[in-house]
Image (cartoon, rainbow, N blue to C red):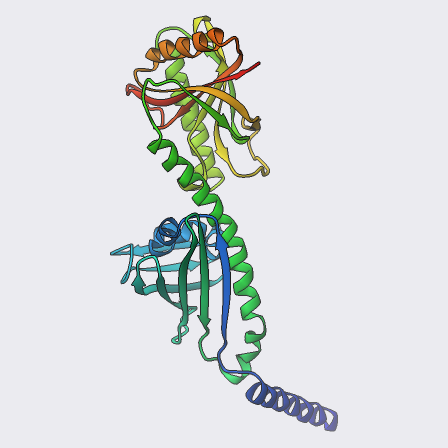
Length: 346
């Protein structure tokens, strides 16, 4: 009996010492600042922060869990927008509010976690340090914690910093694909022949052989695009901003053949494990291309392809594959909007 009394006294003294050390040596709340730079203009970066639907697509806090469920509330974008979330697998929930907005300069978030009545306050400042570079500064003020919970303040900053590091990688990928799409759309000049250098690209897709009779080829392309799109978005959980325009790679002159073989893929930023053997990765090497943009029915692309081949022959250039980049997703019974790229070399 005496032994248990000694143990009880020891535990009480230990708790008292812990509480005293937390009270005197650890602040009840924590303030810290984290700075990062990203190679995109401030207006494109800011729109990924003040639109909470965009924000949750790249912020690691939300993307790291497949079981999280998010509800968005009007106005969806800018001051007054908000979300609530619940993650049953990780036993957490909360609410996030965008309380203040100064366009392209400052945002203030308020985050309530796990029914905590005191919020975490996060001010985010944006500064254009170059036309294509933005400095982002997070200033964080954590809620007051009870004496017994103040130990959490030892790892709060590290946890927040780790989340930002992962989030910035995701944001870079999102903006990379978004900017590439915007630039391609802005550069379109239909039926004009141009010369372009294309960088290496990683594609996730499938290899196909199919009939070239009448509309059979295009119907097959639409069907396989839908397969790839569904696998990428549903099975892999990728958002539209995380990948580029679909690309079809085939022999330049096989439009004359009865059967056509092609690879159809979606550009992604990196490789990862695949759960379906029907899909594979393919690296598209850097090339110099003769390029034309075409809009119309799919069969009409042949004239543009012939123009590219004739140009290559006239310039005494050898040529390889033709790459058909669908600027608008291929849809049955609708015209296509595409970029035709013929790789050429001496």
